[in-house]
Image (cartoon, rainbow, N blue to C red):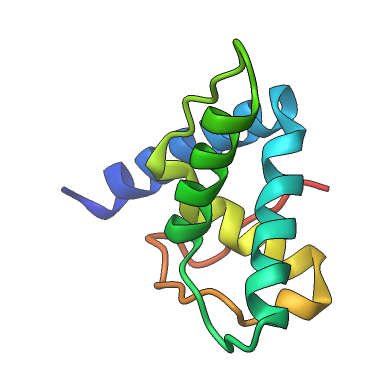
Length: 107
């Protein structure tokens, strides 16, 4: 895959993540709460994918009719948004370099 296609693919995935977040803001709220509980229990680092699985589980066993089809591709965006917006979780998740130099975050 060329760098241009990688960047285009990243932009499309980020837009899909933003759209999902706009329609389901409670998912990020739950990711934050789960991650804060884990951090306050003594963990210095954790996986956003583990947090996503906990959120999926919680919604499965505690809600009726609500299911969130959280795309695994959204995980990297959620991790960066949360670490940017929640000072207590800054640096909590491991991240990799993305295909493009700068990443714009929405507010």
